[in-house]
Image 1 (tube, rainbow, N blue to C red):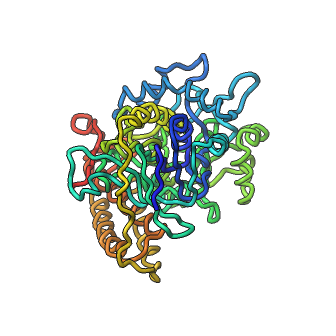
Image 2 (spheres, rainbow, N blue to C red):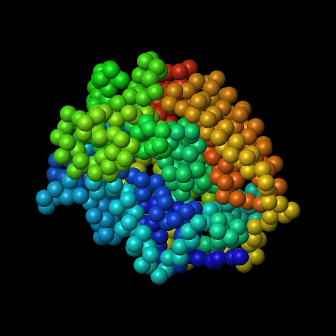
Image 3 (cartoon, rainbow, N blue to C red):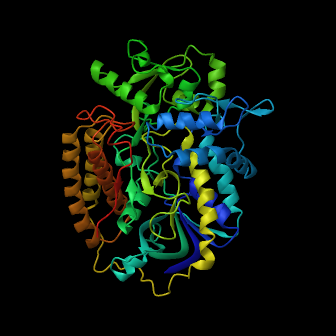
Length: 531
């Protein structure tokens, strides 16, 4: 079954939705998403979106904070562009119906770790949900956007793949997509294909990401021949709720921004031992500090304490966090919250240029799936929603120039060929491998690494890859099998980039190379598939 459009958008977070809304002014948009359209990392974002929005703040200050957090390898031109376009992007979101929290006649700006000023616009503590609500409503009302929920992309279609050989210039023509409800594989063709598939937190055993974050876009782009970069920089959110039933519920950075203190089990505050900003230090430092405290003292968690602040103010500022914790029997106004780090945000991804285009023509990537150069070795809090929305606009402005110059994909693009594949009755193989990849990544490629641990992880991952390749083509494709293949690919890329970097910087800490090396490693790490 073939479905043709001008733009194919894969993903339905802030990146995919804002691009789709802009692109729909110029052509037909097919938007596919793995589950319901609202199921994305955006929907779970609590803290907010960073932008210079007050007289006390400056672009230079926001740029400086971003580059300090990024540990020396942010691309300065990208940082400047994203920061300076921020206020207009905020106004665009407001025009689409996003309602940020106000204080009197002005927007209520909060502060998070690594920021020198209050510049975080938020909607209480459910900012992502509010952004998603407004954008989804706008998308549903747009007749030029066709939504395909419960559809998961299998692989990209490129000219090189069809020709079965390397081409001097390769072009993306669309994607093969599994309809999860029917089991049918559909062929989506488009002049422009956009990856907005989000991150890869599910590569790790413990993550605060939604279940859809399996690195699909990165894996597909890499298999198609696109370059990836800086995959070693996985950000671990320092404070996810430690509770058997909470499934790593995230406690926003903004809680520390409003005065919360990290303490050991005995009540001793410890962050002053690790950074002069104490509890407002950048996330990589806070996550490593917590990891170290837990190992030194043999504790399962540390505690986030905001009980010294006014209870009414806490409840008013964090209604969702307060209510959710209450459901687990924890009153954050009366007792410290048990917290642990968990995989949260991937600072690397598919390499893109200033227009968000990859090195495969007509294939764009925006949001967490992309590597733009903004985040460097560690993302500054609340810069991710900003980056996604800014680059959605950049991709749109460039992609519409391709409509008149790009011929429609040929009608003879082959449909998906299942060959002699049969239904599998051995799904235990998928679940076993899934679990093994995620445990290996958590144990060997976590907050603190060593070369020996990385090499051990790589051996295990490659053995699992061999099993998956055998299994993948023998049985009819399922969503679980697609995601397993993707997390294993992304896991390998993370390890390979980590092995490249012979230093410790930002989110990458290797005990064999504990010092930052600006002489040799003040640069990005790159990987490209060899055909």
